[in-house]
Length: 447
Image 1: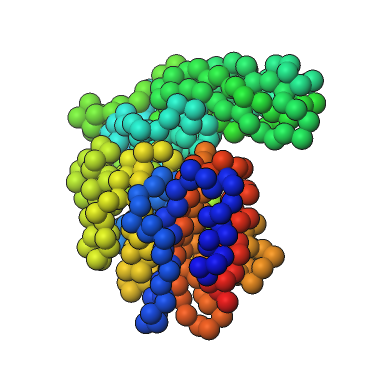
Image 2 (image 1 turned 45 degrees about the vertical axis):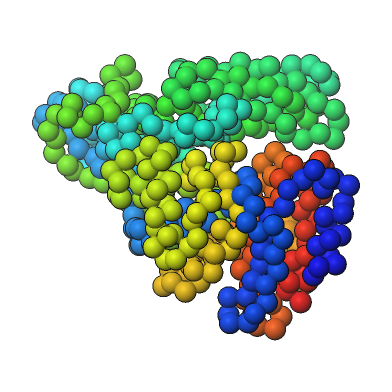
């Protein structure tokens, strides 16, 4: 192990890099290997392991988010002479199909809505996006804010046509394309053989997106995913547009987001949409690394525990839950629940401590089954797929610019279970080179 790890450190691209590495047996054996294990580094998406475990401890695996449906006034003969209100419950998995079906079931044979369609966004107000996310992330699908009312992952799809290297790409279409979504293309075609190196730039509650960077040349309909910046309003606009397309008379000019519960009129609750259980949401969060899901869980945990969703409250709520099971939380600095913020920091020993303590809790089985598997599933599908570590490591990856990390559990050939974390910052090569160089280390630990 020492020899292989020194080979990893000796690579030219590791000059100037920082590494925090910790692995230890959690089944009673005395095996432990560590290198600068208390060094706090930028961890990226392995942060989600803190968030999802805290969610399980606070809310339970069977917890479901609930989106409520109510109305004011009278509903008779298919005509609503009043307002339709959609009460956001913070569900990150809500779909337009589910919401539309629930509205029609709640208001049978709906023909017309004479009043407004209102989004009750009082759960989280306007605090959709963590304050320490960087600008180049905010307009992209992975940088969407977690709102009271989310719909279809708060995502839109942008299709572009690229030409010769250096020419500006043109926009073919946007799906969906509501009138408030304005997109300017400044993205150019890159060199042959390059991939998607584009970024969508925007900010919370802005109607404008700019796409910059490069895309592959000579593509007739290249798809890029973006994030809507006003999720609450977008949800009710999409609902109104769908109802209108089905023949329901509704005015898209009479849509309103209400951030204060006190400003909402009393209404009659007639329906709801429940999410799938938290165990399912956590499974998707950890296997697919969905930032929206992680941020939604973190916010709900914080709101339940502190009645606040400011960044410090979210951090306190997550760390307090971990501290309650004996995790070493000193030296953990969190700015969000997903790891997208480059200001998050903790050490390998912090994460390994959490993994060790989680192993001894009743929630371990649900947590363990939510993890990706090397060479098989999720974000580990292409990691260690050609060596003996394939199928033996259950964990989570993390990556951003000059950051690569892994954490989870290793099932050894001898029947032991190891908790491990490795975080690498500021290497000077491509991230996939670091990933490849880590594979022999995992193989040795399995063997």
